[in-house]
Each structure stands twice: as structure tokens, then as C-alpha cells.
Length: 280
Image (tube, rainbow, N blue to C red; front, top):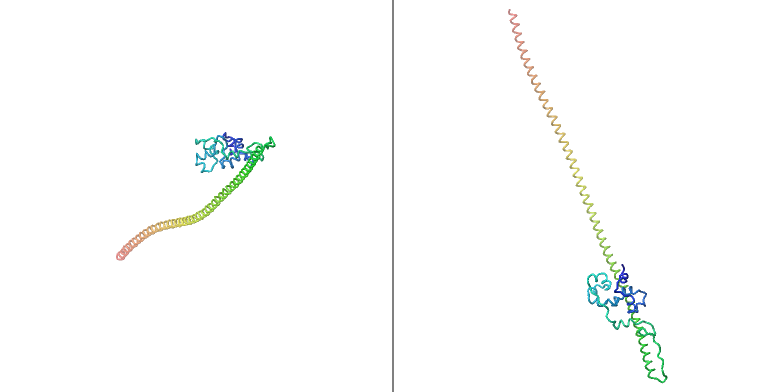
């Protein structure tokens, strides 16, 4: 719901009462709701007979300090917070002046018509009529000055609103600039972190490569050691076989010597038998 719709839905805002109390509203191309939201509350004007803007701001200085629309605050928050409102008191001199319509030839909302002389010889009545006419002309001049003053106030208010918008725009630009600068710093930090991460990944890959090389070298040494053990086992078996062969050879040699000895003994016995045979 927009602010205008909030005002339209609240019984505290009376557009007809607002226009009648402040006739200068008709001089601008704004509805009573729009005028109150844009200018009225800042000028201390009341939205209706049951809500006094000055009294609300005086009762609650925090609302005045916050610079928010008193009636909108009451509708959206103040009513729920239990804040009190006060009806509008009798119109002040300034309000009475603002209630006067701004039309030439009128005074306090009543048409002015020259007072006819009841008698040509009644100089006193003519004098009074002249005085009244001058007073009415003076009143019209004052009303015209008041109208011009109110128009000037509206212009100044519009300029103030434009300045406020410019300040907000500059503030947003400043925030955007600070945000952009912060994003740039975060981007630089992100790039630095990425570079650091790449260096750590590179170092990890190097360590992993060294570990794999060491594992391959260890596996190669293990294979060489295993091959050496197999060779040693083969050598041991060959040595055992050589020992067996050597033992068999020694046995064969011993058997051959025994045969030679036995053969020599047989030859000696044969020689003895031959000698005996010759002798006999």
C-alpha cells in the first residue's frame, strides 16, 4: 500500500477539511494527500481535525528527530506502540489567514460591493465608505502578498526536495563508489588467494612426484634385492651340489686307492706264487 493509499484509508486524514483550511493547496497541481505528504506536514499543517501535527511532534521528540511524516508514523507504528494523538485546537491567526480565498475583489471569502450613498449630503457615510474601501484594498494587498509568500514557500520546498534528492543520489553514488572499491579490493584479494593456491598446488604436485619417484626407486631396489636373494639361493644350491660332487669324487678316489692297494696286494701274491712255482 502506497503512502497516498494509507492516508485515504485513515479517518484521521480529511481531504475536504484540509483544502478548506489551507486554500493555497488549490493553487498547485496536487491532491490534498500528495500536498500533505510533500509539503503540508513539513509546514506544520494538520491532516484533519482529529490529528495535530505540532502536538504529535512536541509529544514525541524522537519522531521530530527522525524527520518522518507524523501521521504516517502513527498509522504504521505509533498506533500499535500506544502513542496518543491530540485534536486540532482553534485555528491560529496564521491558519485564519491561510483559510482566506485568494481572489481579487473579495475579503475573507465574502464578495465586496461598493456601499451606495443614501444621501449625497451624507459626507460622514462617504468618508466611512472610503476608509472601508481602503481597508479592503489593503486586505487584498496583504492577501496577495500572503499568496505570493505561500507560492515562494512551495517553490523553496520543491527546491529543498530536489536538493534532498540530490543529496540522496550523491550518498548512493558514494555508497556505490565505496562498494565498487571494496569489490575491487576483494577481487585483488581473490586473485592473490588463487595465485597462492596455484603455488601450493604446484608445490604439492612436486612433493607428490618426488614421493612417486621414491616409491619407484624403493620398488626397484626391492626387486633388485629380491633378485639378489634368488641369485644367492641359486649359488647356495650350486655350492651344495659342488660339495656333494666333491664328496662323491673323494669317495671315488678313496675307492680307487683301495682298488689299487688291493691290486698291488694281488700282484704281490701272484709274484710269490710264481716264485714258488719256479722253485718247485
